Image 1 (spheres, rainbow, N blue to C red):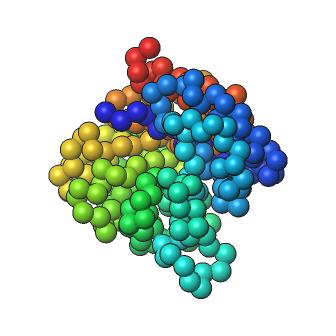
Image 2: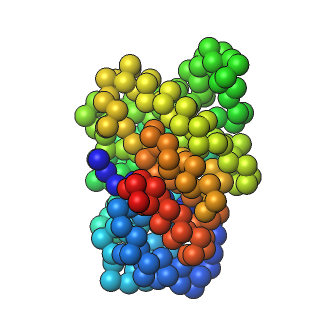
Image 3: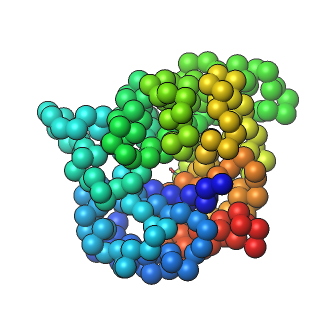
Length: 266
Ligand code: PGA
């Protein structure tokens, strides 16, 4: 079984000096946090300085992009290509809800980006999530229909992997991020996130015959030190995607430490 993955999504935050200080602080701590892989996703303009700020790069600490273009180069004003950060970034977030909502990123575009990541040796972290909370206890059948309908999370999952062969699916991560929980301080419960993750797993098993151990699903949405244990105790979740709390070294390292302890049973 893989180590759990904890991803810090810095979004469009921090100054250059704050960013390099944060990388330095996290990288000094990372080597003491065992059995967990950690990914930092600074704004792309900070990727090279972040690489330089890594202290004696611990082998469980990686850099990632928050977004990527689906072509190697060309006339794409304002975009950044994976090939520009090759050998530096091992991961890329793809289809974050903010990209889908604010920049009209469609499922089709997400699928192209996922394909492009895999063709270039980058592990995509594909975000999916619902805008309105599900009521799985009282309306399971209706909610399952909503998940499968256009724009629903199962449709997002299905389309994101539409350009992949079955054996490639184990090389990606999904990040299940209920949109109502992102940046609101109103996280889902561990049980809720685990239930939705189970439904995603089941649908991948039915549709593509993917074995449970080949699916990796993170939870994201208002993760903080106090709720990490609740999520990481769930068997259907393989790690976390952290936004706001990844901007402070102490908070983020604590989140990684708790993840390590809970998942390794210490
Ligand atoms: P949050 O963000 O942890 O601040 O809610 C999560 C995300 O957007 O990935």
